Image (cartoon, rainbow, N blue to C red; front, side, top):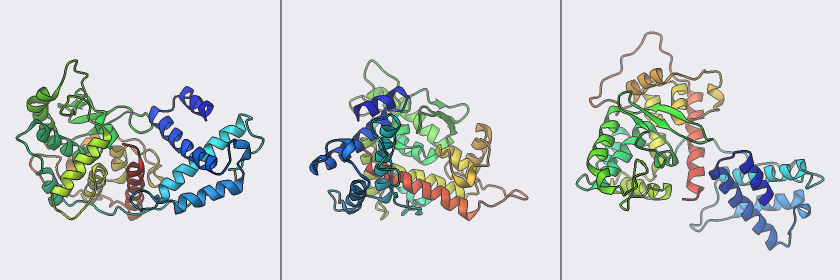
Length: 338
């Protein structure tokens, strides 16, 4: 395992990917050890099938089973590990080569916020305090851009381009950079936070992290999840969720506003959707126009989007594919370490 993880590092896998696979493989190794299996050469296909059944019947501390996507991810990591062992001559044959993986679900999101519900959540932040002002800016950025929680915590004060109305995401999922539009309203709130709140939170030396804790440190993904979930609960809208709920909501509302799936794909940082593989990469200028026209909070004063002659409606299959991919993401984020 150590040699495999070192190989991943040499091949420039992200630190997050290495840590995630290390955790999954350590859990598998512990499962094997409990059953008297100490070496990869002792692992057979029936043993891997037993492990697959164990994942299916496993229950978390809250009594809930592992999601299908989580079971799938853990099995994939194990199968990739054994493929690496075989290719590097640590094993004569691969016991995982014919393991049948579970079929992943393609579900629509359980809960999406309406425009009115979003406004209720946003209104929960106490603007009289620096942290409340910070939280309002965070919620506005999540709503406007739909970025992942890890992407938000990685933002710097240089990530925003006020003049162009864009946000630069550095080393998002897959270590890829992307530039996306951000609405005027969110920009105004971030500007207010930078002017009035961040100077009260920052500690020297200032490393340029955009959103800070009360101790002047970078906010962590786990802390961000707890904060956003608390605001959603406080709004008393009868729905549960956290950062990913805003990601779902942004995508859904823009689709309902008439945005093409390819533009939402660019916003979300999705590379491979079967329904959009034939589209070329869209320019940031066009993406900005679509964002402004379809996102409810892109402008300080909402204007109705004029219909264009011959404008094609987004196909139902494409919408379902995109939203289902978001639901899988949400399940992965829920089971990810804080």
